Structures are given as C-alpha cells and as structure tokens.
Length: 149
Image 1 (spheres, rainbow, N blue to C red):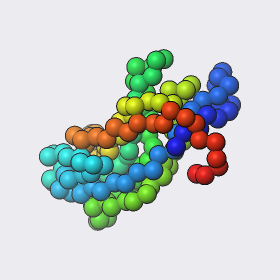
Image 2: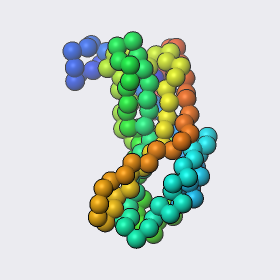
Image 3: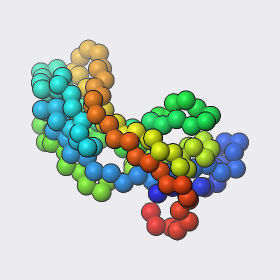
Image 4: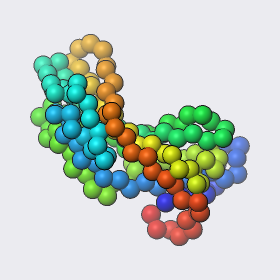
C-alpha cells in the first residue's frame, strides 16, 4: 500500500508513504530465518556468556533516480537472554513510517527487505549480523486513496 501525502518536513510538497505488512519466521538460535529464507551460519552459539540481548530489525533498501541507495528501518524488536529465540510473526505492520523523499516508491519493482540483528554484549564490541537471504517486493503503480491502514 502506498500513498502520496503532504510532507511538512522538507522542501517538497508531497512524498511517498509506504505501508508494508509482512510475516517473519526466524529461529535466531539455530540460524534459520525466513522472510522467505534467511540463513546465517554464525548464529549457532549466538547467546554465549557475553551476550546480553539482541536488537533485531527489518530494513528496506531501494534505489531511486535521485539516490542510488535508500535504507529505511521498518520494524525492530529487542530479544533478551532467555526469550524464545524462535519468531513466528504474522501480518505485522511497519512500526516506523516508510517515507521516501519524493516519489521513489511508486512503481518501484526492487524494494529489498532484510532481517538483521546487533548482538548487545555484556562487554566488548557490537557485532552486526545480517541474514544472508532477502525478499524483494514490488510496489504498485498507483496511489491508494482510501483510509484503510
């Protein structure tokens, strides 16, 4: 779903606002993640003695005629030690606005969704782990005019 809305934050009169509904099935502990299929072999011992929590996030990457790379975080979750490392989320809506600074979402055929996570250690560096799979979703060629979201 995509709308063209007033943008009061910048010099443009209107910008694209995207709404994404998604399913995530992920087994973070065993490295089996699925937005269709995400895999990472380095996560077999993700909750070792030095891991306090994980910061999971779903991001969208796409290109437009004005910007070669656009990255937007759509959803996030903190997973604490002891939480169930198996996610099964259905019909989730984006937690954050998916704004484009123009009209780059309309008809965009290659918006790539990626599930990633940061390991938050008790001490030391913050490693970034990205799933090795991704899902590309096309956006429609027309704007939605109803107030359905």
